[in-house]
Image 1 (tube, rainbow, N blue to C red):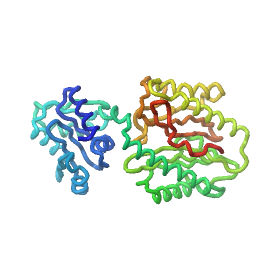
Image 2 (tube, rainbow, N blue to C red; image 1 turned 180 degrees about the vertical axis):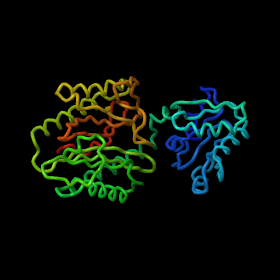
Image 3 (tube, rainbow, N blue to C red; image 1 turned 90 degrees about the vertical axis):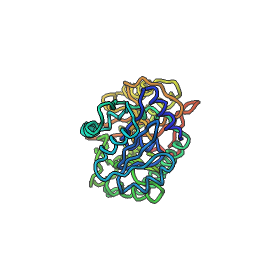
Length: 355
């Protein structure tokens, strides 16, 4: 039995649960070390069961050999899940309240004997996923490596006249030729004033000379994600842009320097945010400082002012301070950081931040 499954069994014991219906694909992938698609997973003391349809049955039997029974559904998967709970004589079964829609919960409940309880649970698995294993770290590091190569490559491709969408397409082509399964999210290429939109939708706009180009890209490598952002400048750099860029860069450096096990997460956010505010741009940095990354692009821990949890060795997250000036430009510098025993290791440290 792998470590994630052993750990979730301990969680089930603490919660006095006989089993857990897992519906979030990332959580299923974490527990099984198998990239899950269109499936549900039952973890129980008696047997682990993977429910999927004929498109994935054979693939799942190979990937889950020895770890779980694979059950194929032709009709209602919810009836099959209910029948399995009854067959295994489970009494108290948890479900992921954030990821099992009410309609699906209702269908399972309708098929169950009344003596079986369905108990809502919150973040049982996500809490475990915060600390990455060595195998997970290897995959995340590889995802970061591909992304670094892509950003180094695209820097030479960008020039006036190119459309944002052309740049994004060239990045996607590059990462697929360099072992990525695909992009981790829709690539953001934002030129000029478009960069002032934190999640700009890459458009047909052509890049002009003497303006910044913000690129936010991540890849999927064997299910694990990366997320990096750099801002490039074409032509002559203006003094206001240079000053603003230096403030964001310094804010990021302050935050990263403070990262080590035991430090409160909101302190890291505060260090970057205060520096930006002290330099007159506090109103132009609205989102959190960063987010955990692994099987999902955004997962725990979330670096924000409200999170007073403590950092721990093995956490991986982004640090991405920013300043967005409406109708002018935006600057976001994003790196991926691993919490080590001594402090912080920047996984994208060899990616140039000069403009």
